[in-house]
Length: 100
Image (cartoon, rainbow, N blue to C red):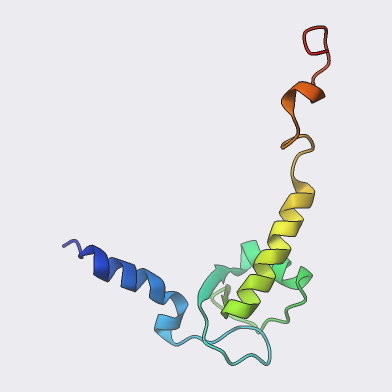
């Protein structure tokens, strides 16, 4: 049975806080708003300087403040590893008699 749109949106907003999880960062007791995979986001958490509690489910639960810090670090790292010339003007990077 398909739920009405209003109920689906409310359910999507609850996220990790629905289960009563708290932030995985040591010393933080705020309610979690996001749950992320430790495999994908663990390295970004280390780079952002977040000390995480161990979780056997391999999940990271973060409050809004710590999620923003992790996301900021993730974006800066992805910007560094992006291919060179990805956002450059295509005509300036090509060499040949037609592009001079």
